[in-house]
Amino acid sequence: MIENLIEIKGVKHAYATASGPLPVLDGLDVSVPEGSFAAVVGPSGCGKSTLTRLVAGLMKPDEGEVWLHGERVRGPRKTVGMAFQNPVLLEWRTIIDNVILPLEIVAPRMSRADRIARAMELLEMVGLTGFENKRPSELSGGMRQRASLCRSLVHKPDVLIMDEPFGALDNFTREDLWQTMRDLRRAEPFTTILITHDLTESVFLGDQVIVLSGRPARTQYVMQVDLPDDRTLDVLYTPPVADMLHILRDQIKIAQGRDVEVH
Ligand SMILES: Nc1ncnc2c1ncn2[C@@H]1O[C@H](COP(=O)(O)OP(=O)(O)OP(=O)(O)O)[C@@H](O)[C@H]1O
Image (cartoon, rainbow, N blue to C red; front, side):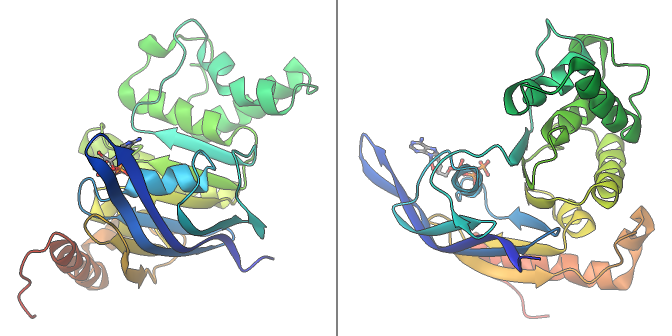
């Protein structure tokens, strides 16, 4: 067991823009143990999506290091799965053919029957059995996001990177998806980085919540979420969670440069 599957050390990055360099990250340190779930929150535009691109190997930082599985990240990897706010399913493919897409790329020698069997297993876990031959437009937003999660996990990635995957869903659907995520993790452990604007989501899903400062972002605060792995939504209405949310809200205010009352 590798202690930290994802390790980001002292990362600094600036984008080149027409009006000069735009510093986005300035001292980012993130450690995510194997099999655990890190939720990342921070003010709008602080650099959260930039962090996901670095972990996915889609860009290199100006300074600092990104490590996955004890190896320095120098380019995109097959062992990473990604899920975004907009599921971008291909309309000309059925749901099952969307879900098997990564296997066509990552496991070209796997038979179609095996790909379908693997995808069906996941579709069942997320409650989409019976919808495998539908087109994406025939599904609700929540169902499309479930299918997209299956697609992100079908090739059994070590790391799942999620950038606001539940952001466009209504509250009830979002809560359903949180529980689906929890169940997927229990069935097939993977290491996750989730970018979110929703503090409740960060506490429900996270083993740790990392608060980034305003841009240029550094790691401002890390909260360990000490709740049972089989947590249910009821846990959100308990005093320890209220305390955690309080602290996180104060940290976000600090990140936004706003005054915080001392409680
Ligand atoms: N390729 C790019 N070139 C120039 N600037 C960029 C590029 N990508 C992002 N930026 C800028 O860098 C900053 C950080 O962007 P990023 O998308 O990482 O933030 P974010 O925290 O994910 O934002 P949000 O909370 O709004 O989703 C923003 O000001 C953005 O405009």
